[in-house]
Image (cartoon, rainbow, N blue to C red; front, top):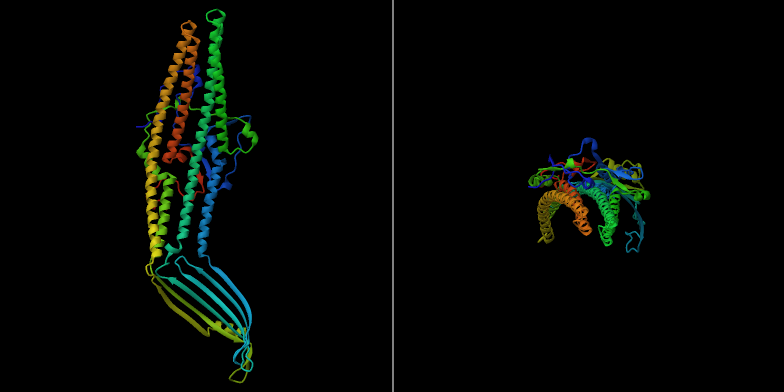
Length: 558
């Protein structure tokens, strides 16, 4: 079983000058769920996240919760995820555009002159066309059109033409409905469905970005805490070395030691000073990593030191927590965005497979049209009663209005491709792609199993490392106390004392590293099981998908 730290107070560690400087030595952190008052709201839209300024003052004092909140408001990585999500949303709009109707207006005029071989032919033909079309596509695959055509023909034939020019007009509605291939929303609506799935996948990318930002901010915070405490430990080591140097000089002054003995203590002081320089550099590096996550823009803020105000306390150490790998893995399958994305990919591949299967069918299309025609002429026409009527374009429109000359068509077209190798090959590819996505889903689950188990094991290892490092530090303190007493009584050398001081410094550094590692492993555990948002009290606003637990099975993401 693996410990995590949530119950049973630990045995308190003994106090002392060294222990007070290594307050992290026996500390651990069991991340409880954040209180409602501490909830952090993260808008999905980049424009809704306003950069939050850092606390004023000569120093930037930050708690862990402040650091997480500022990171989620300021970090640029979330903006990248936001814009990717926006692009996916626009993709839905673009896919729906396939069903937008359109209007087409065609205007044309022409004049053609040609040699004629007969008096019944006109040597010059003038035409003018004005056509209007309203058409579109329905999700069922139906194509429809409403057309209004108009034509003016001027083709004078001397001696034979009595009506010239003529006007013709027609209004007709037509449709074509596939009945086998290309029938249904599974074919024509697939791009809309896949665009929505792509948007959902991008939504889970945003969730992953938030989770990673929380994890990285806590990593950076505890790295900075470690660096600060490490510097204090190095400064204490320098103080011990200087105290040894002072005692050695006193012994030399009273003749208890040879003057050469002071060299070893001065070497130790130089080493401790070098350690302090290195430790200061570690603080600078840790602060810069944290500034990067906080997206510090102001140049003065890059010069202000960041001071972490939270420290793990002795009372926060707990024993007996069992990192339930089975429950953690089940939770991960229900909440991890990688699982949801794998399920979404499977659904997208299913949509493609449904399309390729449809393309293997023969083509059977039903088509029809219904409309009215009209004719007009720029001429005087004698009626049966002897009166004259002036014909023009309006007469063609009247024929349509009165439905004088109706027309209709109805037909079917049946096409059977021989071999149909293209469609069969595409379907085989789509099927293989679907099976590949299912295999990748199985791989994702297997990887999660490994990740959750590794996270639990890391907590247990780090917890025991903290205990071992704490014990080693306590023994090193006791060993140094004993050696100092022996040195005061002339029973050992300054070299031996300096070596034991080095051992204590190494033990304190190892203890601090074990504490920092343990704290980061706790965060990694919550990231692995997928409850880090809940634990840190982070709520994502405007997310197009749900972060609630759901069964890790096909169609669960829909």
